[in-house]
Length: 479
Picture 1 (cartoon, rainbow, N blue to C red):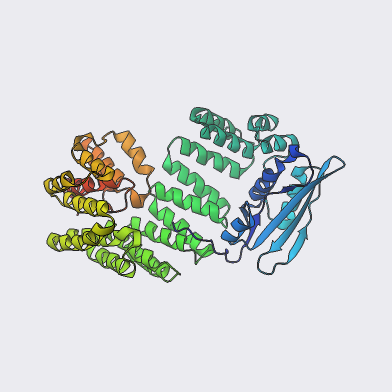
Picture 2: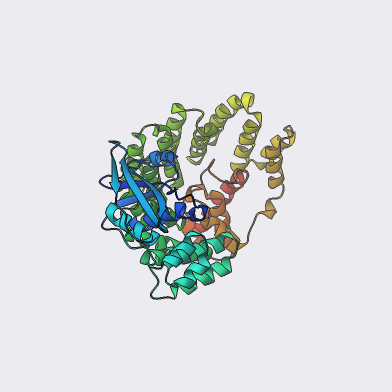
């Protein structure tokens, strides 16, 4: 997804919550600095106010927040006193926001309700448990309040990040077994955490989608659900979530690009093409829009259209992604039935590279020959080439093809942990292992999309994948 500032949500207030500033002079109260914004964010989630926890004004600007919440706290007569102001980023007007109560829990709750009356309550009413959670003592927090869902989620995350997956799952199961656990949001977050730890991609996607449905104007929740459904290969569900995101943020290029791919992954090519045309109209998006649409056509076997889009991208910026669109155009031309013509296209790409990146030029020429069935020529080129780590890795791989991974479970895990646009290597190897296991139906389901050249996280394996994929297509009688 493109790295870009997020446009304001249409018709929705977007408040950046800065860290609370400690003016008490008591370092033992520094925990409130981060705990306060986290509490506000949880309570505002799902309301008309879209919270963004930001570390600085720069973060607030990058998130295109409509407002910024400035908060500091003092200590009077042994009690915390919170003072807050909301700054309208467009008018620069500053308005105080009332917060009253005898404890942090009460004051933050009062502040939240004054920001948005539709805000939810925090997931505990126990002040001591809140402090234990804020200080990072999550086990103490859940001991003080066993129904404190936020603290359970923090405990599970900490255990998981420490490499204690079994303990994290056990803690989550213990929390989820409590019918009185607060809140539904925390329960959904715990379900998503357990699914992640168990590598259950569909369960994770469904849990995150339930969370997004409970907070329908929360861009972060919708985006997380859409990405999870994409990784679970539930492309129609992902597309629906991205369409909802588009309504909330219609000019966000990352959302448009992701929606186009989701439609393309699901085979809805015409819808994807329309979306990419809209995406191309946004500033600085035209080259990537043509390249993305080319990939969508290519994955769906529409090589003539793919070649046209790749060539448009290359003509607009020949150096985009080190000339990758031109290489992909050659692959599309080859698969369209003209290998000599594709060879000529590759030469036009490789020759200019020889002067400024000789290693890349040799590698592209050799891998092209290998991918298109001329393995002996490819190996001979690398054996004559000057010593270069990348070329040596490629040569070693070609000379040890029999050592490619074949373990079905490991390949399945690799496939589901790789984004669909980059999964050509993992998908083809997983498909081959399914065929070897006699599961042709499962293999056929994942091998309908063509692997993309110049898109893998393991580019040295790409040249091996195209011959293997073509062989599998014939074996599975894929059109």
